[in-house]
Amino acid sequence: MSAPNTFARAAGAGEDRAGQERTLRLNVEQASYAYSSGEQSIPTFTLGATSFQAHEREIVAILGPNASGKSTLLRLVTGTIAPLSGRVQLDGEETSRLDVRARAQRIAVVHQESPIVYPALAGDFVLQGRYPYGKALRFATREDIEIARNALAQVGAEHLSKRMIGELSGGEKQRVILARALAQKPRLILLDEPTLHLDIGAQVELLERLRQLAQENRYTVLMVTHELALAAEFADQVVLLQSGRCLRVGTPAAVYQRDLLEQVFEAPLDVEIGPAGRPRVNLRARRGEEIT
Amino acid sequence: MRPLTVRRLLWTCGGLALLLLASVVLALKLGAVPVSVTDLVLDLGRIAIGRADQLPSEYRLIVFDLRLPRILLGILVGAALSVAGASFQALLRNPLADPYVLGVSSGAALGSILALIIAPRFALITPLGALIGAIATIAGVYFLSRRDGQLDSTTLLLAGIICASFFSAIILFLMTTLAGRDLRGMAFWLMGDLSTPVTPAIQWIFTVGLVVGIGAIYSTSADLNLMLTGEREAIHLGVDVTRVKLVVYVCASLLTALAVSASGAIGYVGLLVPHVVRLIFGSDYRLLIPASALCGAIAIVLADTLARTIVSPTELPVGAMTAMAGAPVFIYLLRRGLR
Image 1 (tube, rainbow over the protein chains, first blue to last red):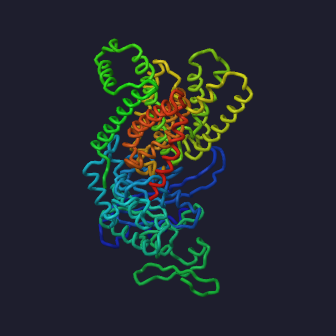
Image 2 (tube, rainbow over the protein chains, first blue to last red):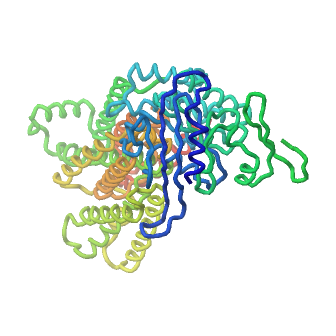
Image 3 (cartoon, chains in turn orange, purple):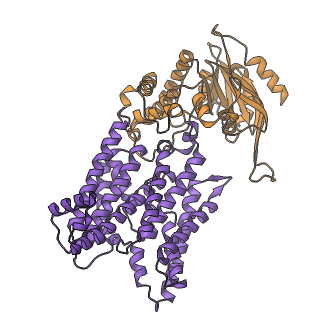
């Protein structure tokens, strides 16, 4: 495992493209995990030692096919599970040792769309993001309402605040959920397959917004996805996983190598480097015909 | 954005409390023996200043020794069932959940039947047996649905439903094989009925249990709001989900157990009242819990008054009333809510 990780550190961290001061936020160091059905039984899934670092204002994509360990890595970062070896630190604190409340003040998680059982106003939904800061019954203070309103404005969804969540379109709902995450005033935003139910226009809009928010508010954004093209376009760093092993960490240009991607995703692919230095991935038909 | 404020909470609950008072007066007035409202208010005033001995004895017997205790029991039962229903709907994230979905009422019924068979002569045996049966069921379902020290909502629901149908089967078996014995009261009790008087001691235990149970559930109401959007989401927003689930499961089940031991399984109230309250006041649990308690009390007091008077002098079990009135109300609300 150590060889690709040494490579990763050389390629990923330390560079300073925008000329900004970059503070280290997230430090994942040789973290591993194993699931098993009982204490004595053989693990059903293991995530081998994984290392990467993320700075403020950075977007990191965790990339890999199904059952590659993306969600496990995400859970390690959120601290809901503690690594078996190694460590996961956010601003120097082990995430799994923080209590739930402290964790929610630092890390916001945007899940894949979850079913809303009872109707709620979008505005009230965003206010839920203030929960980790409230007292016992969490009656909203003026400050909370102001923060929630700003969060909605930041995702361009002020006009949705009086609408019911259930009535919103997929893209609108995703924006409201993101606004709730922003209302948590986090340092790290984690997104689990954020583009899954979105059409391509909404996907691009979401990622452009994330890039802008990360720049303005110094968030670190960590995103689990299997959208190769989007990760290539928007991520500053890519962590490539396969069957519970961390294969590569680095800039998209460094990680997107045709042989590697073809082997990981088991599909015939073409990779070319675009004018901005970002790789482009095309699906190649078996007969050599390109279908993009 | 219109977040809940303390002011709105107090105004709403105050208004509902007045409605409850009005329905209590109505329930005291109506019945086989008519009583005028003026007399009632005057007499309530006399009782309040400690001069109850001035009341005419026959009248006092009917209104304050027969009707009032029954109304008070109805208030306790209605509040307990509605809060339990609202809590289970959040805990199981299922709008169809009611207080009986996890088998507490079947356990209580089985307990009381077994108690009647074992010691038929002991006066308090039915509520005691019911309480023991209910608590045994709560514990059983809890251990069946624990996984890695966590309560899993889906397993909880399945374990509860299985226990409920298993106990119902045993009850049917017992009632068929023991047909010769005097179990007539049993059928009435399975339907839900407030006419069996409870002793003041039980009334006190019930009141304390109700206040503690509702209080504990209310302390988690902000957490329940978040758990409605999903358990993972709640964890990432800083909710201690394991603790909240345990508190809500134990308290809501105990509230149900108390209600069922005192009055049998009164249907529909625990399912319906939280939905009605949600439609009128929104689904914020900080308001939903107290408003459900008050509306549940109002619903039972009115339903029991109807049950006492609709075919007077014969009395119907209140459970029959709530089921008959409940289904149409539910359908109406469902259609209205869909629009």
